[in-house]
Image: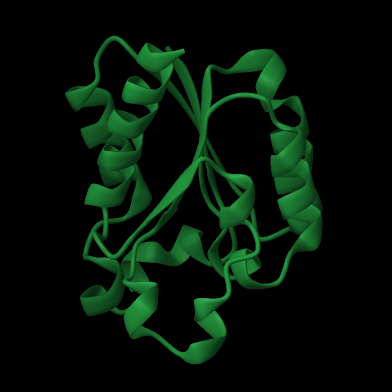
Length: 143
């Protein structure tokens, strides 16, 4: 199975952010763990602080991948354009947030993009990506 993982703004600085909210691993460590735990899968990773670059990847994802895992970062709360691109993406999609958004500021309670995904995972730090892969496996087996 080929899975595209997209991370949005500021996730390139993950190891420099508040460890209590986001965990203490950088994304290369998380990606290494995913590859070790799911050796028969191919993971392609892309991070951007630029909304249009993420949209371009989402628009092509259905042609190249079996599933999409996305952490849109702050765009989750603001980007109608990413939401619309996700709606057009025909592969299984899981949104991941490292922090527990329910415990965060009120503006983080609105998730525009999550409603265009099959589901979302929030609050489990790096474990959320592993849970997302397991969710994709189960969704694909039901198809």
